[in-house]
Length: 521
Image (cartoon, rainbow, N blue to C red):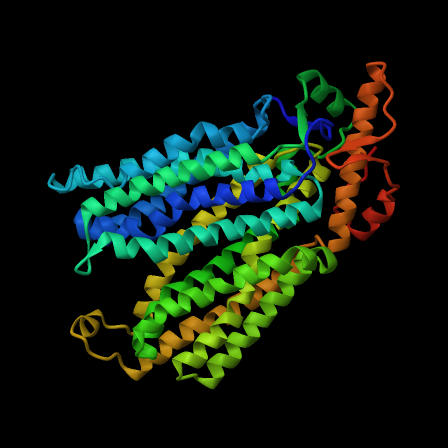
């Protein structure tokens, strides 16, 4: 087995990082969400209302699929890290390679071919098409796409902007699908199978166009060269530059703090989104405000997309996330204490409540690239695909568990489906329970997220900048050593922005600041 190792920073012929990369990366998540959001919003209702599958069987499929994803996600990540990159890069070719299979598989999930077949045939069709789409093809395009951010640029500012544009792409897809498709696929308040199939085909075509834009607009600049078996053996013989992949992965404190924080943030946001419909129609008795509430919930993303990058560079991603979580937690608690009864006032408050979760979601992909750098500093290897795959699977597992817990929570507060079906009103205790589920419980969970990033997650703004500079020096030193062996002297590191003289970094001081920070030989 071989391992990837950074040897050169970039080739001078490649264009500088710019708006083309940002827009291209945005289109990548746009393409992802043309199949992912379609599944999130309509898969269950299609298979329960059109195909006649029990909701329990659909839910079981989701949980089993997440277990399978533990193997396919991480397996894809390791494959990316170990395969030799081609002329078009390590990750980018997979976007073009898999865009048609993933959209075709998505389309097949909504074809009513077996609607009149036996129950076992319908369940089998549902399971097979879902696994082919989610656990195989979506994994094979999403893991490369997410990992690619770390090789588009090594500049923290650029990476933060990529994270912002990725979030904007996802929200645009959500707006497009949630605003348009319900009016297309529902006829007389019931999903129409033919219209659903047509909608899936159109979304698939849009996904291919977005993936193609991502492939053509994004450039991989950070180039990695695999170590040979002889190099690995030589490094082990002299003690090595790092501690090894598995050991450093298991002890990667930023990674596991990020995973735990993301799982809790997902739980809070899914709890809020899962109870929102009940909050509007039962607590406020105003279901018509739900669409307004959805728009208001998304609105902070577009505001944050303007200010997130400069704020992150000035204050730090960790620092902003901690502040955002504490702010939202406090606002949710105060709103819960006030017991707001006006739907209009609550919509205004909702905008500010969503600032915290949206800030987390916008910055989290940039935080992940910081974790990838930390992994390289500790191990001496570049494991972008594997680390991203672990995080991606953890998010999928969190989404599945959160969806399951939301159902339990609604039942726990005493919600009576029979009363709702008859058009009656829920008890006052149930209404207060729904209000509490939307505000107080997320307030506690988001406060925990803030504490995790404050206490456990170690990568402050200062540490991230130091890590980035140390990696640049380490890469340049390796490149200089290789050039010397080849008889071609190299005086400066070549970066995407031009020739950059190396700055001095006191690694001993950094090691004293962070005991887990490794010093180079």
